Length: 593
Image (tube, rainbow, N blue to C red; front, side, top):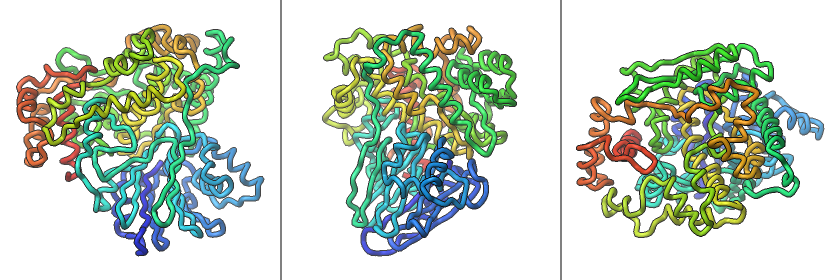
């Protein structure tokens, strides 16, 4: 788990090594254990290292193989790297390290760009071919590992974080109007390739980009789950689905124990993280460290779910760490979390994950986390109402339960110069719902949520906040083979028992019933959900800052109304509308925009 960066010059000049060094330095927290920069004519690559596999310097990056004429920078973990290493060694490849990075390098030489088909894991990487001058970028199937790109007539740059690109300089920081529309429609999700900045794009998940020395490039999408029923599974009973999903989940959890350092679990007390603990215990994992976080109550809302996490920790005898965040620590963490964001993310969960990660990183370097189960196995409240919707009503129904506000409402929020004439967010959803596959409306909703919304909200949130503490988070519910099986599972099996029915079936033999049948919980941070005192002051400060006044993103009358009643105006999904606007300004100001 690391941070990578690089530049490809298009104007015949040598790569700007100083700019790559600045980008690399900006990612120090992602990789506190080592740093390296490699330059070869028009190409320079940078890397920050977090030591997880092969703790020796033989695993350092950028990693070059002069015999093969390749250099790689890699972020992530290939869980099946040992099996691939054995296969490559049998084919005659010689290894100088025990790292998964070297397996990526050799696999690329052996199988070309489609080496990604053989990887079980999370990854983003860049390979430079010495002889052709070509640079190849790739990102994992579920977009767990990020990769941002900026380009002009003279060069192409890329990095694991957007702020790293800003550190390199020369980025167009104008607001992307379509991205702004998405931000206000989809509670801060900006689907790829856009970001909130016009000059930065992100490589979409499950994509290979081949960049020629002259800057021309081609993209190939190498994976996309179908969300249709498979003939060979037509006769499966609920028990068959329970057993098949259970076995695939067990494999996913076991895979994510691969490391040369201890692995813990972020235990919220919900079904998903509790199942991970149960399956690790079932597999014989001893002395498992688990971590839960809580906050002071506010406005009558509890700030922790310790009751449930304590049940699970006691049941499985884990080395449990209950982290109660004092009120005075929360406000500084808001700004720290905003600084750690590669893109503005409105969920108050970000602050919870930031604080949790800071504490957890004092004990372990790798954790497993339950992110993705709701999007993959239909755990959210908006899925059941879609089950009976006709296909020609699907887009309206989905936007009615998922989007924060309508196109007309957005026009009443942003200043005229930032408003779009067309409803870009609706058009985006229409395009996804019209794509081949996805037999039912629920299938279509799960497809867009698990391949788009999940990637640019919960997954990005966990990556950004854990990596800000030099902590690697692994998400077994996003194992691509498990996701493929879940996509083929009939919606009624997933919607059963109030959502995540097939997971609840599996959990009956693993967990106390009190954990399984509890109301769905979230990472609560009441002081942010209910703005008052210093938190309201921070929001007011962001929206009244001179930079905000010059930018003029939001209508002054709308801001005045929001500030007059800071907790009375919420989006369709219950987000605090004032916080959503202020968070965007806070992020822009934090990053000097």
